[in-house]
Image (cartoon, rainbow, N blue to C red):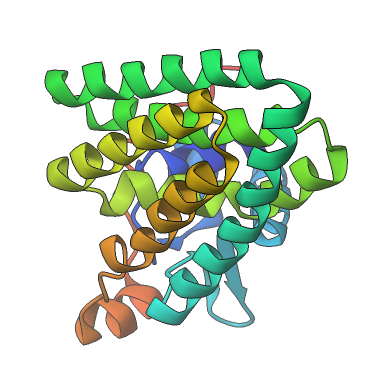
Length: 225
């Protein structure tokens, strides 16, 4: 249940800032209210859900400052991951990076937004997973859901194309074994996210949306497991 709701947020099946009714979610997913409550509580720990006493549960809605802080954290974590991956698993990392960037390019050409967002996530995940450091991997998981959700919710065709061009630049520097250049390319790429995804919700969307709006859940698929 937790993973199903997490994926719904990450893939854009529900909107950022939406109020989530436990009763409606339970009905839509064909389960009792208890597992829905447990899932929302677990997702709060991942930063994907905001639970407001006496108000309800809401999908996270980041401010510009939130996104800037998120990018700073990503830059530190991913830079260290790149260094470790180059030293510990250069060939495997390079193969995974190329596969993800190629997949993203194909998805962009096909106009498949979700597939391109997932490939983008896979690209950065390749650096993290190949770092060989379990503490670093676990630290990244604290924000990976938020980052993936922002890719799905706030990315555009032009943003995706620009981002993937930067992916190929990172790959080129990584393949050359030029660590400083690879780190520079990665750092610039991540910090650009703060500008690309800093779309501020309108005042009406931020207030009325978070306090009262509930999603139609029309695109939320039933729970299959």
